[in-house]
Length: 172
Image (cartoon, rainbow, N blue to C red; front, side, top):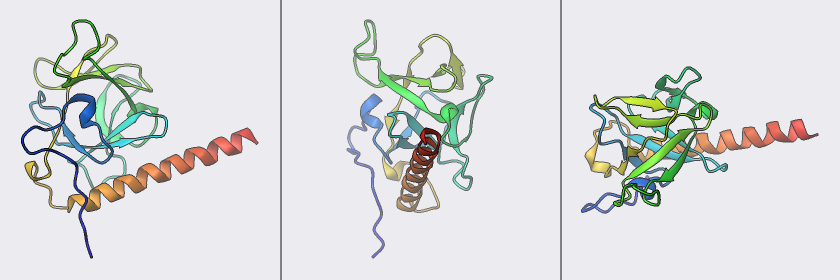
């Protein structure tokens, strides 16, 4: 019957940094003053996409840094809505706890961070962002989370197949 998918999160200590970025896990940026959680997706290229759970009715609800450096949750799966993630733990002077990562927009080349006012911002200089998994019970969604996770996985799969087909046509 109807089973619901769950993200693997220890109730005592949520996963932080790169460890939080598991496919279909739910993550938050705790330094933001107002943030809905994000559903994590990973493309075959290794880039991550973050689906805003605050705008679940739209097919264009991925976090993005657009060409003008503006940040919103109206992306799909293009390069503006893809991010490369790097741990700051290995960087000299970096975060020893591993809770901070660098999220660099693939399309813009800009780094996502939370400014002093608690808002998302973009920078040409590497700036870290704190990220952690959110236990399923910690947010109040009206749609069953398993349904959202399955839909997200389907969308990522369809996008990857579309890209493969487009590449095959260009190569022939």
